[in-house]
Length: 545
Length: 85
Image (cartoon, rainbow over all chains, first blue to last red; front, side, top):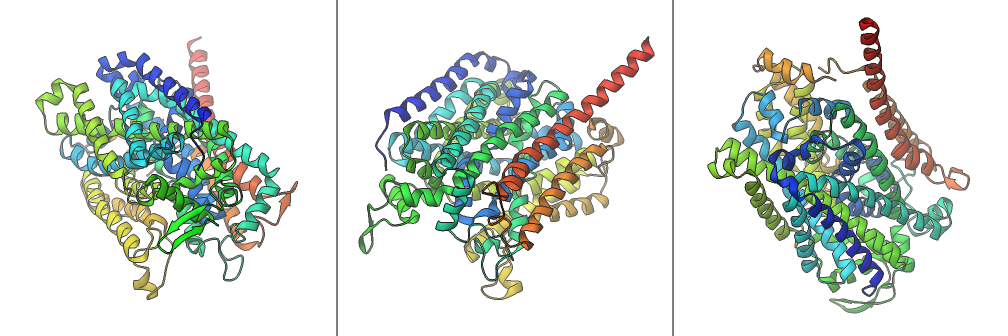
């Protein structure tokens, strides 16, 4: 691994100086709870769009997507098209109606639309809390990996330093600090990915040569299902279900995930909310453009240029000469004590390390820190509002939380971070796998009642409760069952029941639960009592803009 | 269900999903489409998936979803002005 480089350190210090400066400059925002919750609804479309991109796109994007392209090949490109293509979907489906409604927190809409102010907050809060856990963990893993690349320090210390930095600016100014600092981070991450992508292209001398190099190192990389008898880029892409499944895993998230939806609340007005989505696409799409290039080239770059190639790896059978990408990553894991599944996520950083340009690596790690910290901060705001305001104050009527709203949120921020830090020392899965599970779980349980609550007068409270209570454990169980019994959460968990031993059907992250939950919600709604006409008019019909 | 959703939403999503799924199905049926068929020396997938599918098309749809309501608002404002004068 390269030595600590002063240029990389300088760029990291500059990055931290800017975000801490923003946190300091916006510290007065925390005096007013409304500013703390939703930035006083003063945020314009460009800033909000950049902040949306940085919050919504996480280390799961910056590290996880290139790692998945590296592992799975070309068909995974379509998953990235699905993510960016899901952004405009949100404009009319949720962004404009929710901005018109202008709530304070994510659970407010469910409580008002389904006429239940207490139990609804608790039940809808359960999937949100699990999503917060998954995303804070994966963001801290990402922060830790980037800090490790910068400082060459053990992974555990890298995670702790990253967590302290996140705490500082969320603690200082809530949503205002996170909106402004996140907007800066949104621009930075897009610039970092595009510049690194262009550098990779220049290294190869263009798209054609890059494609040929990939073909040389991984001949099956470019294969879609069915085009070559008996061959595929990865067993998950042996059939069309893998391609379509991955396309949809993250597709509906921008319109329905709490951490992106709450940013629609901060927009100045409905027009601004709509325009924000265009800017999110500008920044997010540019970043993905660069990530596809880096992820596609990663294996070839590492195996031809990484300084650890040809070095020594200590194994149980004695020392061996490092000859491939797996051994490079194993050596890095051993050197820095990287826990759990996180090391594969390092492939993206290793690919840029291989180019041996400190300015490029400095830019990449600054962009990576930006995306990891912004997502952690975004989810911390969702989580602290849920625990401090929605649960403690609103649902349980806790006097201290009602009288000290800001202190309550800050206390919850610290608690969530502590739990997140603990789990990120030894993450249970790759960052993109944690993200995929959180997406499918949240869209199936909360996304369906949100979208249908906005667009279907017949949607009922009972259907909302039933959908959350049924699909939260189902998604969790099927995901874990597939992972432990079949070796990957991307296989249909009952594959062997239908196809016999060894049989596999590719259904990434058990994505089929989303349409099943949609149908389930409709059926239960049709057989149960709808909300009053006044509520339907106010929280459904009148929000259609 | 989805009563009140403006027609341009369905147009936009139809264009996006139509394009994506047609390209995916073509890729599964035309050997070499992703790599062997080239334009200016680069595999054509860099154009239809990497540039158009990933970037230009979603941006175009997002722009459409912003632009149409803007035009409708302008029209309504114009009509109100005319009525007032």
